[in-house]
Length: 133
Image (cartoon, rainbow, N blue to C red; front, top):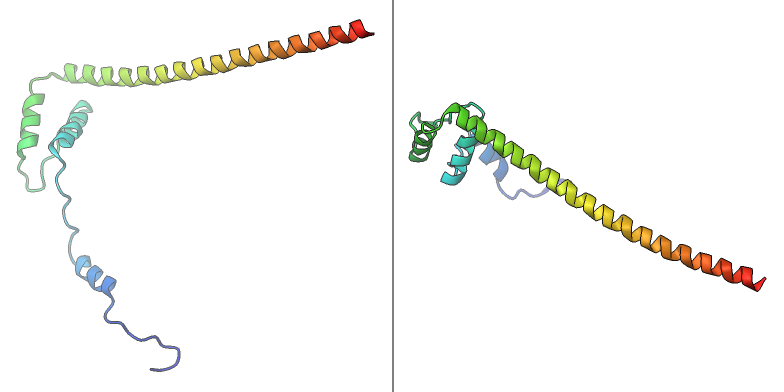
């Protein structure tokens, strides 16, 4: 072994893995669970997008049942559903803001009470100084 060189521990593992992957496409992603697939497709339909088809071109059972269920609703009904979800989200945000403001009001009331008691103590001390003088 020459000075300054490190001993070899075998072929580099990372290079051999990346060399095999660089020649081809990445592996496909696994399918979403049915409930997540329904949510994703519902959001796409509410935004006016058609649900995507699987890579092979055929629609799997979850997507087929989802498409069948969307045929029961008109575009107006889907739009109203989207609007109601947005309104509900805004209502929840407003409710959280009201709760935060109520807490701030409680803190302010507590501060006023403590300030009033301190002010009463100062007035009592001033009165006692006036009487002592």
